[in-house]
Amino acid sequence: MALCHLTPPRSFLLGSSPSYYISSLKLKPTVPSVKKRFFSFSISAAMASASPAKKVLVPIANGTEPMEAVITIDVLRRAGADVTVASVEKQLRVEACHGVKIIADVLISDCSKGVFDLITLPGGMPGAANLKNSEVLESLVKKQAADGKLYAAICASPAVAFGSWGVLKGLKATCYPSFMDQLASSATTVEARVQVDGKAVTSRGPGTTMEFAVVLVEQLYGKEKADEVSGPLVMRSNHGDEYIITELNPVEWTPNDSPKILVPIANGTEEMEATMIIDILRRAKANVVVASVEDQLEILASRKVKLEADVLLDEAAKLSYDLIVLPGGLGGAQAFAKSEKLVNMLKKQRDSQRPYGAICASPALVLEPHGLLKGKKATAFPAMCDKLSDKSEIENRVVVDGNLITSRGPGTSIEFALGIVEKFFGRKKAIELAKVMLFVHP
Image (cartoon, rainbow, N blue to C red; front, side, top):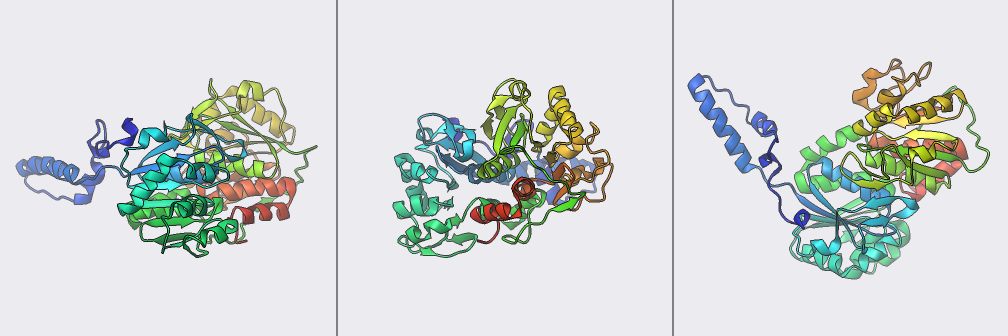
């Protein structure tokens, strides 16, 4: 299939802008007649020197850890990589861990003759074992290693897949702590959050995935591109330390039972944020309902990851919730703001003094314009904070004000979800989860 073969450079495609390449030349022509010719030449020369988008394969399986898959895909696509998501199952739709449903772009068999700059495996069990059992994937990764090209894995996959295939011999590698003994038989084990040795990149778990993905960007494109991509993610600088939430006007969030939480999604939703929220809250044993505000269950998220909701919003609206929490993403937030049903549910939630929250663009584009931040302190994606009427707490990564919780972006999503866990289940439970995910040092 076309996704598994070389595509033209991004700058060659119809409608693309060569401004990035032009501006980097910093031309200062002074003669008008020369200016026109030189400008034309500079475009051609710059475009001719442009390399094709780096091609990346991310295989997924039933039992894949969804955070590890989705964060990696999202971050690499932000860098401009041509990422193919391939199912090793018999169908495109995979049931990832914690009930997250992801729709792949292609089947792994469609990629058997593909050539990639990077092949990177998410973890999760039994996802890692299902990846290991794919003969097509094994062949691709072994060829990748033999050809001296980048290959990477996280969590259980360095031990379960790469170890079994013998592609880490003589190399330093890391993985999820409970698989380190298994990895020791096929690599030199280290406890780094991300380990690069030659063309092999390995990492530990969900809480190290964003760091892992940024390192992959650096390996493919260089440090300048990695810094450019990581900036808007709003990542932590103190990886592994305990997280902090800012709480004002504290009230207890006390559900009758296991908290019932609604997570709406839409076309254009930020897939990292949605996936981290859903995954972590389900790890905490909350009853999470994922509802599509579109007219079908499948949505196309902001970086083109295809996710499947549990129900449509019309069905979800028949129930009441202990918390309604909105992921961000510009298109998704705009869709939420236009959904009269969702906005009315949020207003009812507020009026009933039940918790509600939002992250990234959604505090500014959904809550603020509908009066849902009135008298409240909140934060949002840095570029959106000018839309908030009260900016006094915007620099905080997670802000809880009574029954409202808000946060900043993809890089604060784990803290945001843990903040929700903390409000419902207590700090001890939240820290336990943070350690299991390796977001906080074990």
